[in-house]
Amino acid sequence: MSAPRVGILGGSFDPPHAGHVALAAAAREGLGLDRVLVIPAARAPLRDGAPSASAADRLLLLRLAFDTLPWAVVDDREVRRGGVSYSVDTARELAAELPGAELHWILGADQLARLHLWREAPELCRLVRLAVLAREGDAGEVDASLGAVARVERLAAPEVRVSSTEVRRALAEGRPVGKALPPAVAAAIEARRLYRPLS
Image (cartoon, rainbow, N blue to C red; front, side, top):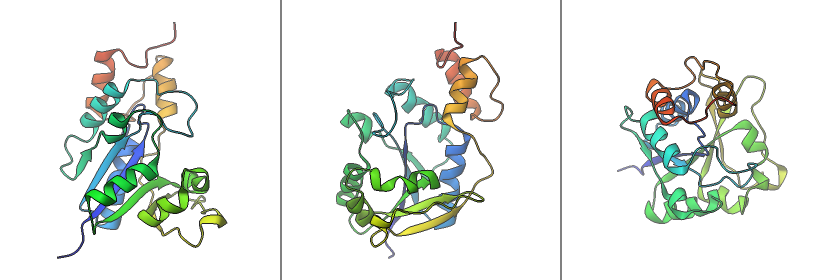
């Protein structure tokens, strides 16, 4: 029996959008993953300020975004841990919980270029393979300091290109976001009055 192949998609997910769902699906298909763990950070270490939405709201929105995908599991371990969320801590936990599993950390090319700034980056690279979204003209390169330990796998970019920052700005300005949000996420944001227009 082959070792399970598990993808890990982390981030603030503030809010989760169609691009997150497309990236998880691209990783699952491209790498033959058995499941993808979607793990919202309590607070991302390299992000300025706290998330706009509460952890409870972001978890709800994530569960709505991935509700129809049986291979995706929303994992709240970093929210429960609280404080600043470090990927290496999560990778250690998962390696202990899933002995023998192949762990694939899913990230964008921009994050790969900054990976050497992450806490204990060499240890993270030892624990996981790096599944990197390569956009046209921007495949991303790992810093030379991690070249000997980083195992990088390239993912074809999904067609959906959107950012949480753009979505938050549009919602705050009262502009439509089109198909940037899964319908259930858009409905919940409206019902809970999240990311409201600036007064």
